[in-house]
Length: 304
Image 1 (tube, helix red, strand yellow):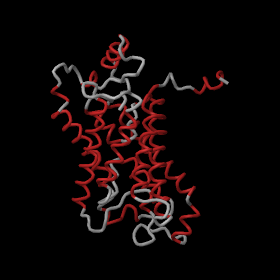
Image 2 (image 1 turned 90 degrees about the vertical axis):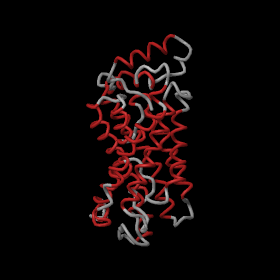
Image 3 (image 1 turned 180 degrees about the horizontal axis):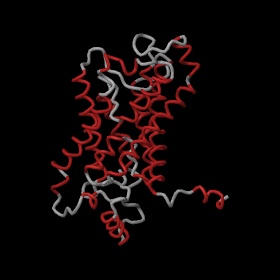
Image 4 (image 1 turned 180 degrees about the vertical axis):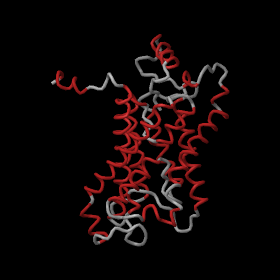
C-alpha cells in the first residue's frame, strides 16, 4: 500500500501540500458551521438554535486547525492569513494561494451541505429559493444582517469581532505569553469562536471569515438564489463580511503587538516568538533548533 500512496505524496511540493491542508481545514469549518445553521433553520428551531450553531462553528474551527495546523499553520481564514503576512509569519507570495485554497474549501463544503439538505430545503420553501422573507434560506450559507442593522454598524461589527479573534489567536500562540501545548491550542481557538458567536452573533451572524461567507454566497448565486445574495440591500452588503474581517484582522494584530507583543524584555523577532513547538521539543535543545530553523526560513509554515 505504501508504494502506491508514496507516489501521491506532496512532500516535494510544500506549498501545494499546505494548500491542500488549508482547503481541507476550511472545508471542515464550513461543513460543521453552516451544516448546523441548515439544521436549525430547516427544522424551524426544533433541532438547533443559536447555541448549537455557536458550538458547531467552534467544533469546525477546532477540527479544521487540528487537520491543517501541522502542515500550513491552520489559518483556514483569509483574514487571519493576511494578518500573518503583516506579522512576517507567512510569506506574501503564499497569501494568494492560501486564500484560494480556503475559498475553494468553503465552496465545496457549501455544495455538500446543499446536497445533504436538498429535500429539507424543498419541504421548507417549496422549491422557491429566497434570500429575504419568512422562507429565506440563503442565510444557511452566507451572513445577512438584521433589518435594523445599518451597513456601518454591520461593518464595525465585523471589524471588531475579527479583531477579537486575531488578538486571542496571537495570545494563544505567543510563546512568551502563557503558551498552551500545541495540541491544546486548536481547542482554545475553537472556544474563542464559540464566545464570539454567543456574544456578537445577533447583528449579522459573526462571519469573521471571508472564506466562510463569500465562497458560500457565490455558491448560492449559482445554485438557485440568483443575484439576490449579492444584490441584497442594493449591493451594499455583500462586501461587508469580506472587507470587514480583513480590516479587523489587521487591527487585531496591531493591537496585540502594540499592547503586548513588542514589550517582552527578551523579545527577538516575531518569527521567534511565534515559532511552533511540539511536545517532543519541550525541555530539550530540539526546541531551540526548531525555533532557529523557523526564524531563518521565511517559507516555513507557522502554527496558529
